[in-house]
Amino acid sequence: MPFLKLDDYTVPGYGMTVGLNGTFKDEDASGETSGTAKAKKGNKGKKLEVRCSIRFRDADQLRELMRVAEAVEKGDGKLYTITNDTANTAGMRQGRFTGTIRAEESENVRAWEVSFTLAEHLSVPEMAESRSSKKSAGTQTSQGTEVGPAEQPKEEAPEEQEELGWIEKGLQYLDDKIGPQEGE
Image (cartoon, rainbow, N blue to C red; front, top):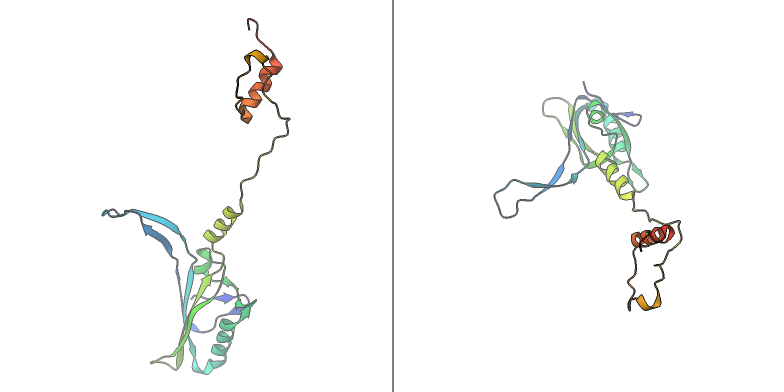
């Protein structure tokens, strides 16, 4: 039988069912053709859908569940650590209440049929995306000294001197250090 804990609070009731769904965003990439190509747009956080029954005589349990669902932390819905086999197997570790919480009177027994949804907080794709966006291109610096082109005799100097890139400057520096080859 499934169980669900949110931090230290165990969700009450009997006949609990837990379902998990995730959304994969994609977009048609086939243009005006009849192709089926899709462009991946990222994975969205998972949602844990919970259903259970709480007996009328356990009204205090329903009140407590509503209090937990309505809890606010730092101006937003309280974030809970989730302990549930289905959620944890799929990598969902934290979540907060989202959408609607329902408690309807059952037709067959004296109990409320309760349902609610928990939305994942910091999904695995979201964490990976935030890590990759934090990596920035570093600037490269050179520890060496700037080397200019070798001086040419005045009569051979070109009218316009072209600016050398760092590779050309390095090659020119090596050429100057080695010196002229025999026969030059």
